[in-house]
Amino acid sequence: MAFIDLPVGCVADYKGQLVPRAARSRSAFGTGGSNISRLGRHWQFEVRLHKMLQDDAIKWDSRLSNDTGDGHRWTIPQGNLISGPEGAPLVAGANQQGTTLNIDGAAPGLVIPEGAFVSTITNGRRYVQRMAAQVTVSGGGTAALTFTAPMRVIPGDNNVVEIKSPKVEGLIEDFDGLSVSVTLARYITDGATFIIRERG
Image 1 (cartoon, rainbow, N blue to C red):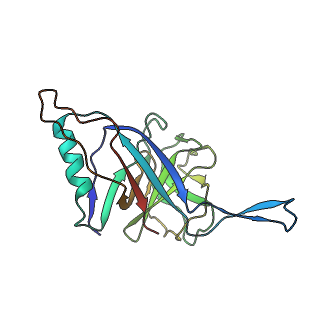
Image 2: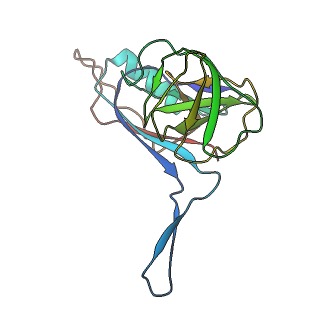
């Protein structure tokens, strides 16, 4: 698949959301309720860019507006959430399903905190997950990652796992272009936003 890589940096903030939201059921008397977690839910990210130089703005505008590929690929900023090297983490074992993924090859002692995003590559396609609990990689480089939602596909043994720089591959929505200034200040206007949504 030919994805268009978005530039790194220039992100003021972003918000991740699982879509569609869990369905709700209530008793006939309205006294009880429960969540119905649908299989196949995927992530979307609403991203707000900060003020940037004209050269950067033109790159962002050009790539966000380009719809000639299969979609776009964006590196999810994690800041200093995960420190130290990640090693070479891989899926450890075939036929894993549900909300737990066993990995190996990670750097011993690596701490992957609750709320961090990770991505896996299965059959040439990336899938995003979010950590439901903190885990520390063992001395042998193994760990059991627990996610906030079931995995959408069954990863293969030795599939790549991205921890420090996870990426989302999907389609751009709600982008109206960047306002690029040609004045001496050479900055774009604050508040340019876009949404990138994983393909279902």
